[in-house]
Image (cartoon, rainbow, N blue to C red; front, side, top):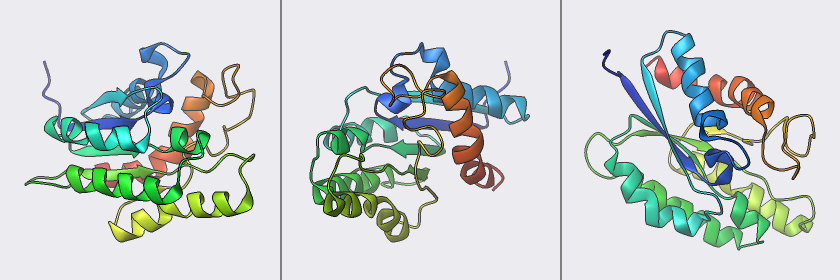
Length: 189
């Protein structure tokens, strides 16, 4: 068996877990297939938990760190937004989780997967929420996917029946258009 050169952990909520799909249809499994097809020796671990908020991510960050990944694709906050949790709490929780992920020697590279507040939130909430991810990316010098669901959110062609969670076609679009442009330069280092 060939040794895996790079281990990635997809750390997130239902968008990572693949809500409504099989684990083989969720983006971590599809991303692994795409990267392997490009000749990269990778393993992508799905560490997505449906319903997880940023506070839950803080509690799980040490576990994710213990997996000793080379890269963490860190995407939490959708459930915070859905519940209209405080953007300040979101930022503090994500910052605390990032501190845990960066702890110790050989800390993984973290790729931050940004989220946006839902359209039914008021303007003040949307502006405060949407500003969290670029600010954290700048503070921690992280590569950022500005909006994980760009080109997919609310499009019935790319989502399951709830209109939120991606279907397989939606995940392929996310991988090709949103993740790979930011991830591939990290894999080439």
